[in-house]
Image (cartoon, rainbow, N blue to C red; front, side):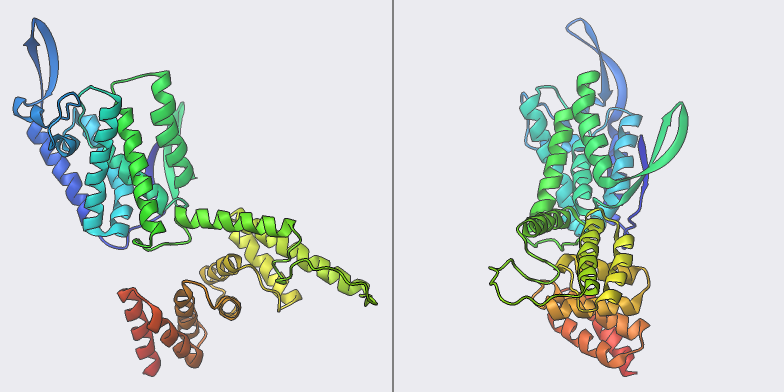
Amino acid sequence: MLPIRTSVRPRHTPYANYALIIINVIIFFLTFQPHRVVISGQIMDKVLRPWAEQFMLYPARPFLWQFVSYAFLHSGLMHILGNMYFLYIFGNNVNDKLGHLGYLCLYLAGAVFSSIGHSLLSSNPVLGASGGVAAITGAYLVLFPQSIITVLYWFFLIGTFELSALYFIVFKLIFWDNILEPRLAPAGIAYGAHLAGYAFGIAAILFLLATGLLARSQFDLWGMIKQWHRRRQYRGAVASGYDPFRGQAPTKQIKVKEVEKSPAEKQKEAKIMQMGAEIAERISQANLAAAVELYSELVNLDSGEVLPRQSLLDIANQLTTAGRHAEAAQAYEKFLTHYSNYEYIEQVELMLGILYARYLGQPGPAASHLRAARDKLADPGQRKMCDDELANLAD
């Protein structure tokens, strides 16, 4: 199975990734020279020019530079084509996310950690960019786990299918290729270096996201972990009797004269509770289109109902994506009213400003939200977007 494209496209030209690919190819043609030598009466196959062999990594007697130089050497045409192909598929978007310097640092650090992992598990010499490529692929897994990868397969038949990056990288590239396959058909491949590279790439990006050194998104692995945690908290709260849609905890019942509700009111309450639970279930299944339709029915039934914070934000974002701008604006306004202490509230203000300015023709609310966002935004590009929108409104 071979990945042939991803659903994510870089916003900027990934020059650093292109440079790495070109450098690897140039070094390959400078150093590759298959030949045979006789050592102690035995004929041995060599793949590098004699002067280049000192740049391989020899775990039994390593030199410091070898922990980096080995990653720019390859043992054959298929070896370098495979590594550079995967670096191109997964590296472009990681380069776009990290910037050129950050991307180069991650790649080189991944190569170093991969070589350390190999040295701890094996004494065999090693060469190849696989460890650095594995680190980049691990970084892609964390940054774009929900992206869709189109996979080419051939097994009697040839065709393609689509799979999320999370499942493809974890189960195919990591588990099958580097854990299960070595047990079934061991080969002269540095599996330890690959696994160390994946582990480093995943851990490094998770650390950057967790500490806020790298901008987070609800679609990255850190965001998925937080959503899972919120769903776990939600299930626990519901199980204890808390009503997340009304913000009411179970209270001690005092026996007083009960007000009897009409059958219609009881039916409406039951339907609201059922729809709220169904919305939460659809969101947990990543079926946002269905969740949006249920939410629209819920609002029509009772406009005062408020979803949990992340659920409401997911619904508002999906409404925006679907082009239902008026409904999206109402959802964002409800979010501002009930969750004004949200850590990224300026992003919500920005979205509302853009919706009112570009799609709903309401310059007053647009200017108000854009100014509120402008004062809090840290990203220069987003601040400029606010300024441009405000200037257009002034015209």
